[in-house]
Image 1 (cartoon, rainbow, N blue to C red):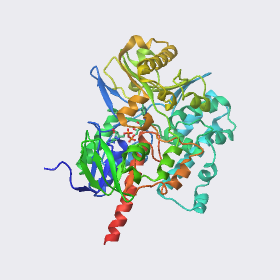
Image 2 (tube, protein in one colour):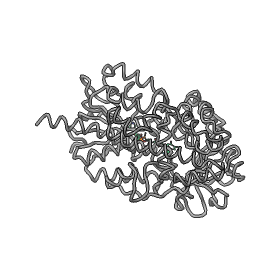
Image 3 (cartoon, rainbow, N blue to C red):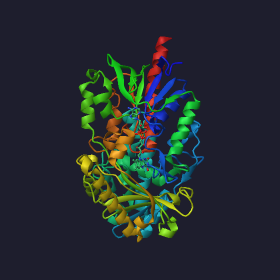
Image 4 (tube, rainbow, N blue to C red):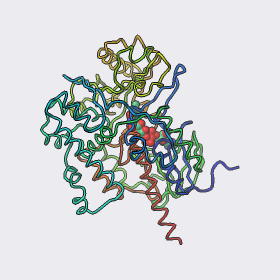
Length: 511
Ligand SMILES: Cc1cc2nc3c(=O)[nH]c(=O)nc-3n(C[C@H](O)[C@H](O)[C@H](O)COP(=O)(O)OP(=O)(O)OC[C@H]3O[C@@H](n4cnc5c(N)ncnc54)[C@H](O)[C@@H]3O)c2cc1C
């Protein structure tokens, strides 16, 4: 029996969240799909691993776009529609902000959040609620426009707030609300999830982030992010998708500007008219297209013109006491010595000490996260890759441990607990770990940065012009929605839709 069929309708490179979303959607429409994943497991960084007999989440802090049962948002609804049933747990709070002069825990719900900010900074309720409502209006517009593109005139009539704010930075829009600095600081902690300082972050992105996370709250799967990956892969296979693990795709085969298949590192040549790639465009256009002469100059210009977003440095610890015993009160803590997001972004280009940390105590969102009497506590920062690229191989181990130690010391001081004395297991993930494990270009977990020069609205308009090779689509954090696991699912769906539209129009022509 042959390992592969002679031809597939679609080949998907990468069996993580984006690739599996594409596969699920295409299989539902009856297409014959092959997924090639270089690891022995699905999920990419949406995974977990076992140390000392304890299962440990590798990445996920919180998922956006899930929504409560009965009122699911787009990612939660897509998974349900596909028959992927995840045991979702709602994260109890939005976050605890530990900032100069502020120790405040804020909860999701637009009015709740505004009330809690007002309790800390009296007199701000109306303004904060107006700002959050504006975010919500823009969020609704983005959701509608991403599915139903419309003329500029219609857009202006139906989506006035979206059109009016689209050209402005987050800082410019927030400034119009004339909020005291402390209130602005309390609105800012999630900035790190989108990876640009407020002067350079399009308001549209901030609005979607706030409306989604603050409006509906965030969620985690009961059995870690790997529950999503495993259940998606299981469901895809049940729907007829062929998933092959330990299959690294080396080359995407192109002739006369059109894809005709892939070649794996093992040497198998597999044919299809469509390839969806979770591998970064940077990687694809510089080394995966065969022959490279099929790569148009414009494709290289596009990848060179885009700014890579942030990577990740994470210290994940299993501690020998419960959260309560260690005095950890919140699922999510954002701690910084300033909330000047532009200054913090600038600092992220170095190798620390990092001034802005995001910490998760999983047990406070999922009591079953670790064995009784223990808890899991992770400290993460999202550096730019610049500094890490300068680290020589012989210095890597030292630098990694110095940075981790600085982060543990900072949080030990804050919690007034010697965290090191309680470590049962510790794992340090660096930008290099991420790059090596997932193949993400330079270890960048969020794809290309959203900036005022490279705005999501402009990207939507240039998307068609950026299809440089017929039959080749991309799905992953590097596509339009960017920024995390939820958007990776949306990007996977979008790539599948592009393939389907083309496939159906060819079918119609052939009739
Ligand atoms: C520490 C950390 C914390 C994070 N926290 C969050 C969070 O709280 N919330 C959130 O939403 N996001 C978070 N993220 C980001 C999120 O994990 C990523 O944005 C998301 O998983 C990207 O998914 P993807 O589908 O692009 O796949 P990736 O995870 O990029 O995986 C790509 C897949 O393709 C495979 N692949 C690549 N090249 C090839 C090839 N040539 N042949 C075969 N297979 C290939 C890889 O093995 C991998 O499985 C975090 C990331 C990290 C590292």
